[in-house]
Image (cartoon, rainbow, N blue to C red; front, side, top):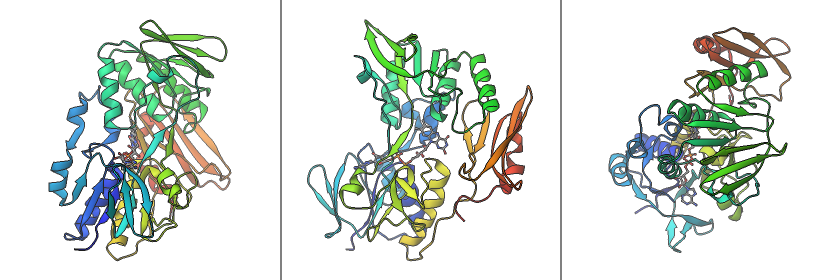
Length: 383
Ligand SMILES: Cc1cc2nc3c(=O)[nH]c(=O)nc-3n(C[C@H](O)[C@H](O)[C@H](O)COP(=O)(O)OP(=O)(O)OC[C@H]3O[C@@H](n4cnc5c(N)ncnc54)[C@H](O)[C@@H]3O)c2cc1C
């Protein structure tokens, strides 16, 4: 029997490759190894689960056994890989088992960044980047009312909206002057802030969290300017760092992510990477659409038809129902300007280069309806 295509990771990237590969080849042996439960679920559903009436159990679409039968692949849950032996084409599990591969796909995801905070409450700060994290958070929420979220980025704002709508008292703290500071021009950030404030979110902007201390059964966050916020539970959402360590320790090239070319090939023969762990042609794009495109291309390549990945423009929907948003972040290294139209109903912000070409946009409120007209005008991300 041939050695299988081994996929490490059972997130959206791992499953997308398995699914696409199965479509092209019904026979190829595929083995998925996962450090977690190995079930299939849509991670984006975590940040609006309260408003959509979902529980951690109802978010899962299929457990490892069901997915294995559905896709006709082998799945090994709770199988953490700790080393790659390129010479012998094996991966080594935490139990020191050696597993042979024909090709290896790294779909390892990313780790939450932890701020270097002081205080006796830092080990009780929640982060959410998978279903198990979310389960713990939801259990804790059952007896808590006041939630502080550190980080007003995409995930922080989505959780803020979800929690506030469900009746929690939500404080959001960010070092920048506006929410979604990396994605929106100031006028759009202000509009979003007002809409989230209208559903009860309280913002603390230009605020650098220094410490989290537990005082009896609550927490106190202290900022650099001496101000404080008290709450029952702290969620940190300050960004992700691609998981590169497994690759790096095997001598595979890493930079911000695991470095791959347009064929999703790492620096090592027959080893590929995609999803949140990968840096594709210099780009780290931790979203669903790039995974979909990369998985299709990689499946074709693994089936003997080398296919470079192409990324069209891929606008992202931000799940803040208090303020619908679609954003297609421009490449800010290209000189350009935001042109912003603001009204009571929404904000239309277009980022154009010096010759007037549209490079990106941010559409808020009523302006989201312009997405379908504007998207075809955007340049592809990878041609
Ligand atoms: C709350 C939230 C909401 C989001 N909403 C959106 C959205 O609306 N739209 C959008 O486009 N994107 C959204 N995203 C981002 C999107 O969900 C991710 O880009 C995507 O799910 C990443 O999938 P992945 O498979 O690359 O990584 P992951 O889902 O992190 O999967 C990594 C897998 O690798 C396994 N693994 C890691 N290391 C090892 C090891 N050493 N051995 C074995 N297994 C290992 C893990 O157990 C896991 O199974 C959201 C993210 C979050 C957290």
